[in-house]
Length: 254
Ligand code: KIV
Ligand code: NA
Image 1 (cartoon, rainbow, N blue to C red):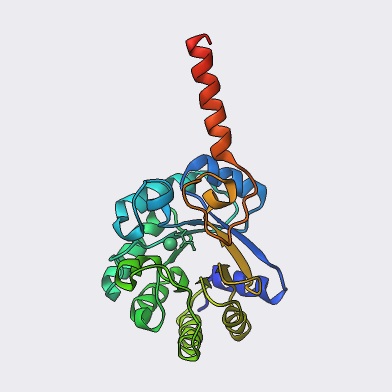
Image 2: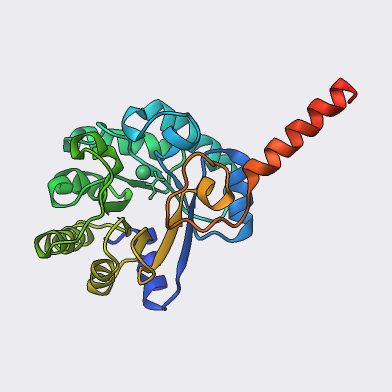
């Protein structure tokens, strides 16, 4: 049987609706996004960098994800909440299912993990138990150390056909949607037209069915690094600095 969320996302793609997806890691942000009409909310393991100050996502643990997933859950009534399985928590099917169940218990409507055909047994273990699952292919941040950096994917014909094969395999394994990260736009477009579930692009061009941003990049809340594709709609870093300076002035009686 097809999961209700998978069916819903398929139907929304079929109707031509574009979906807006943002990450959230805490109660107020998640609640504001939900009330603003964001379609899907992702508790991403980008948490490690933009909230916890870690150098990359490889040090993020299940306990960190559970803690933040529960906070986001309390703030969201409408949007489905997707939660990332962090690095090294889904390498074999039993491990993947066990950790997916823990995220669901913390409030996840769907879980996401990185990988394609190479992860298919873990994906099947999750979907077989009726847990909604979102794929993630292309540039995989959890593999940054192994890959030696963040690289654009789908530049070669071999790379492009591997990505297409991964997307089709994940859809067959029951994925509700697939994140395409840092994939050449033409290839992302080809993948999007080859599957019936929505593709969620980040740095993958405008032909994807949905777009996701790390919310700090939309809000201007992480000024030390801004990815080139991020369009900032606010500058909260500046606002925070301004308010903090005002408070300092007021307290010191300047
Ligand atoms: O962790 C995250 O924020 C993500 C998105 C960039 C897709 O996985
Ligand atoms: Na992630």
